[in-house]
Image 1 (cartoon, rainbow, N blue to C red):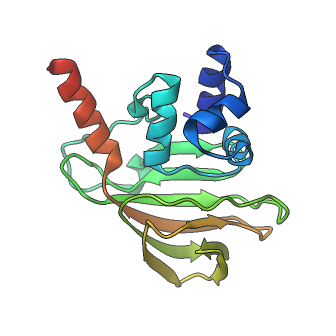
Image 2: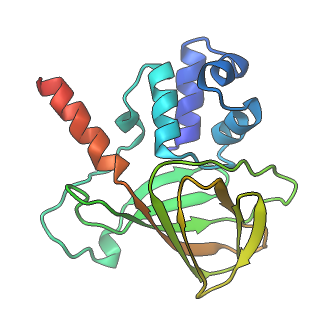
Image 3: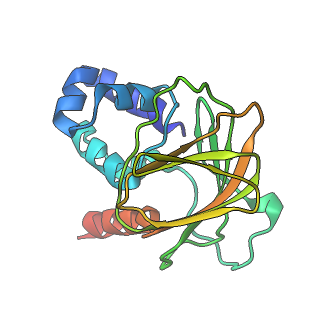
Amino acid sequence: MNIGMEIKKLRTDKGITLKELSEKSELSVGFLSQLERGLTTIAVDTLEKLSNILEVHVTHFFDYPLKKKDMVLRSYEQEIMDSVEGGFIKYSLSANLENKQLVPRLIEILPQKQDEEIVSYQHAGEEFVYVLEGILTVYINGKRHEVYPGDSVHMDSTIAHNWANYTNKKVKLIAVNTPNYLYNSRLLESNHNNG
């Protein structure tokens, strides 16, 4: 599922303007517009805030299975977690996210224009990025870093950050995040529905 497109669909179905969504969520119109066009990513806790405004559970945006019996995930079994129009394709690197703290993903980022505004965001947890292919531009606390194949970034996710691909080739990276919002959100929904 394309998260940005789904947010736009839910917003327009409810007759909410971008400005109104911006005011209710305390997120800039520019960021929301980029998100809806697939030009930026969103942290799960920020997505949860938008979910509440749009009256859906955050798991509405995740339509991939989170549970398999095997602990080994073969390369041909990797499933797309999220495909964002405009450049991000995220693959799950875990066969089972239940009761796990880490969310490992393989992310491919297509080239984008340098004049696109990159909005930094913060969220709970830790983040680790390892670049496999291409040159990733990372913004940490407003400072720009070029990260090359074999380079890595490990940081507290409460620091303002984001990344982009300003080259003319695809960037491929492994990202590992904590906490596991994906499973915990589903667990909360399941407990709420069964309670």
